[in-house]
Image 1 (tube, one colour):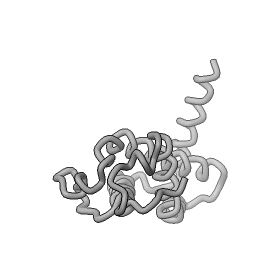
Image 2: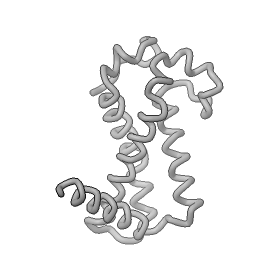
Image 3: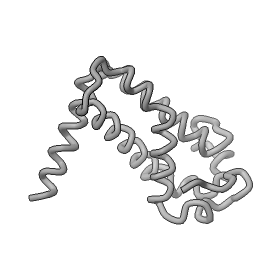
Image 4: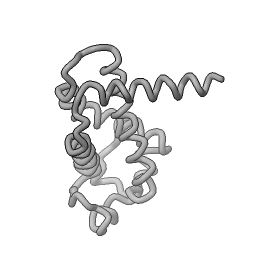
Length: 133
């Protein structure tokens, strides 16, 4: 779902009808802006790394939506609030700053290697197997 102008529309409910709509938009935006960088963090290019990177980006979009959905419903008010910790002028800028913060956490945690993303894949795989039983 492509949102209409975020600066012209005050209520996000008219842009994103559900939390899922926002989550999809955030996931696409984070993927567009960070997938190449995350691939550079791993020194292997394989299926497990690929799935792990996608799982990481999806986790970021879920976290963002859980943390900010109700806060950014009225962007103009949120933009001027103390909760706009990135001093972003638009929701898009806020999401990208959120993504940069997540990348910094990966770097600072000394997790910036292929095994980090393979572990993401294994966690995702195990959760899916548990859900089937």
